[in-house]
Amino acid sequence: MDENIQELFERTKSASLTLLRLTDESRNRVLLRVADAFEQNERNILSANEKDLARMDKDNPMYDRLQLTSARIHGIANDMRHVAQLASPLGVITNQNTLPNGIRLHRVSVPYGVIGVVYEARPNVTYDVFSLCFKSGNACILKGGKDALDSNLCAIDIIHSVLKEEQIDENCVTLMPATHEATQAMLTAVGYVDLCIPRGSRRLIDFVRDNARVPVIETGAGVVHTYFDKDGDIEKGRRIINNAKTRRVSVCNALDCLLVHKDREKDLEQLLEPMREKVRFHYDNYGHEWQSYDLSIKTVNSLDEAIAFIQQHTSGHSESIITENAEAAHRFQQEIDAACVYWNVPTSFTDGAQFGLGAEIGISTQKLGPRGPMGLAEITTYKWIIEGEGQIRE
Image (cartoon, rainbow, N blue to C red):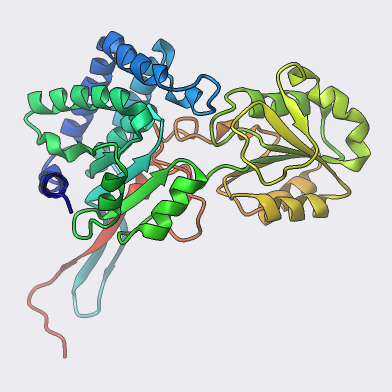
């Protein structure tokens, strides 16, 4: 391992221990100060982001995710303030018992320690990860993509300046070099990185899973479906489908495939009308995450067929049914295996802030470990606290 990268890991690990001494009040104060600093440095942030944008083709699906605006900066700051207002996830007693011999047991929530996050052209991830990790007492090592390098450097400079003024070890937030070697180093940093979370394309997530020697929670790509049932309401359907597809096409909760019951195929023209001028429709290419103004469409003969089709093609991220039939909706929600399953609601709501979590560190699509959106509670673990008066085991 490169000596400079080794030193980064060592400093972050050491800083993680100092976070245990902070009170929730001091953590909240820092988050509020950083949120204010982001807004005060809006011009510098946008200037740095413009440098990143200049290096990317505007037709690239990642361009929208890379772009920061005044509204997005204020939204990020407000999400951070929301995180500061949430109850601390630390020190929560999740189980307790007194044994017959008088020994007292408490299971208490604690930080993981150091969380590494690998992500691509998404500067908002820098802010979200910092706020959630700092609030939950975790140090974080950030490995952003080269596409967002200037934006990420600017964000880290702002965070470090506040931490320094608060006399908190600024190494609790570390930005790795934007190189493949740095990614590989993080994935093999046994003893330094307690948990790694990838956020990005399927290729990135597969690479992290296949090469990591440290524990990984996968946050899968979004292959998202909406099923318009035979008992679906057309007006609800028009609004839901349009919002799910066109609100922001580059995000992982955007709609990729619309399923329509054969009895409602005659209503397809009305359902698609609100987005017809923007969206290109395909009647093939299923199981594909578009991240663009493209939408796959398929007619199915029944709810059974819709569920089977989604189960075959889903990434386990977000799925939705539009219907006025409660029995059909409940069956869909019970049988569809995804982190978020909606009824008469667009999948665009799959977001930590929208769920009241303040922000999110990812949407877990695996069975082992937290699912999503992952907020404060999902990035803590626990330890047992055992107390007695000298009892010994026979």
